[in-house]
Structure formats: structure tokens, C-alpha cells
Length: 176
Figure 1 (cartoon, rainbow, N blue to C red):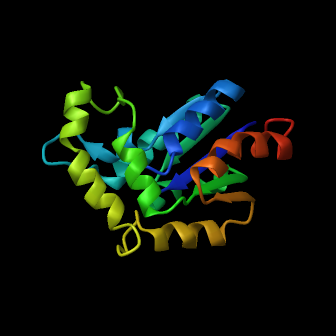
Figure 2 (figure 1 turned 180 degrees about the vertical axis):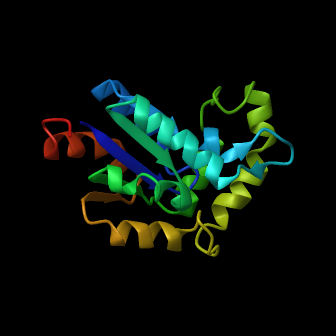
Figure 3 (figure 1 turned 90 degrees about the horizontal axis):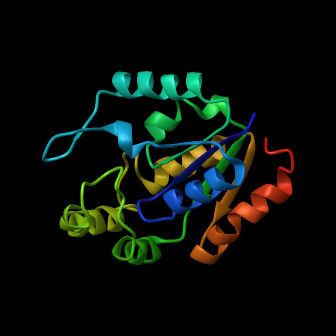
């Protein structure tokens, strides 16, 4: 079995790395953004119980997977199901720049225009990463990462993140 969780701030490269892993290992990919929010404006968090049921359904229907997101409260539902955790921590400025150049995410937005309408809000969110104390904060991510007892990798730049897949493959030749 192949299971990996990718954790980090918005714009840290989680989706990019998860897509690379999905393609390399031909595994299922769950972006926690897709089940963490209700489809309302302004955005509102989905009930955590409902999100946990969706995560369990994903786990039940997929043998090999990569899960990515910044939600420590949701990741706690699957942390015991993996032995591989990647923490992408390239810094707030890098995350901000990555947000400005991110490609359209059709699984989140019906158009690039709608995605760009949220860019300023997203950048403000990214910039608060080190100051927040919620489930999305640097503190919460570091606490989860430090407590994790399995294989864990922290990458602190875009270039390190782009090498993460090679690093992971080197340490996990049997894809597990």
C-alpha cells in the first residue's frame, strides 16, 4: 500500500507535489479543500463530522493515495493510516508568489476569473500563516509534523519541493 500526506500553507506547493506523486504512483489524490468547505458565499467550513465521513469513504475506496491540505483537524483523521508525511514550508513570501502564479484549479473554481477574484483574500490568508493559532497555522502544522513518528520530510523552498518526489522515491522504492 502507498499512503502519503502533504501538509503546508496555502501556496506552498501541496497540489503540485500531490499531482506529481499521483502521476508517478498512479494513486488516488484527495485535496482536502474539496470537502472542507460548504458551497456557499462567503466560504463556510463544512461540519467536521461530515468531512470525516467523506475522508473515510475516500480511504475505503482507495488502496493507494496521496492526501494534501492545510487542515490539521482533518489530517488527524488519517495520520494513523500513513507512514509518510511531507511538510512544505517554503516561507510566506514564496507561498504568496506561488499563489499569484498558480494555474486554474477547476476542481475548486468554475473559471480562472472566479479563482482570481479570491486572490487578494488568499494572499491575506497566506500572510497570516505565522500569526494564526488555528488548525491552518504554522504552529499547528509544526506540532503535527514534530509529533509524527513515521517517515517525515520538510522542504523549505520551491526547489526543495520540486526535488521532493525524487527524495521520496529514493527512500520508498517499493512505493509504500
